Image (cartoon, rainbow, N blue to C red):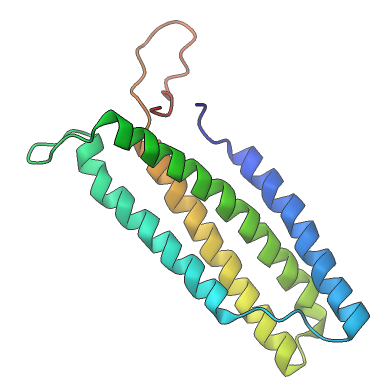
Length: 160
């Protein structure tokens, strides 16, 4: 597997951001109200980001084979890398969508429902961005060390 590229995540976020903006704008245009965004969406994304961060903190000594910790089996490291890649992509899509919803809701923020949707979608977008950062760090920890061969970028590959 190749490591996740930031450009790919930005592209996913932009595409889903446009989709979120279109949905929020259509909701306002067709029904005259802001797209309802539950605050629980933001809470869930922040909990997911915290869980991936805790996983990275607990896996780090095992992946780096520090003294006093049991080394992580290769299959577990590969599954951890796959989880990190999936979490970064999902976080990018969700961050873009909720940022688009916030942008589409922004003109309607003077109403109580619009204000709630704006803050909830903003908190969800930031939580999804935190998920992306934690997942990218976990993926980085799962990389195999480079072997110094010609053509090796020095970044290593994701352990799978």
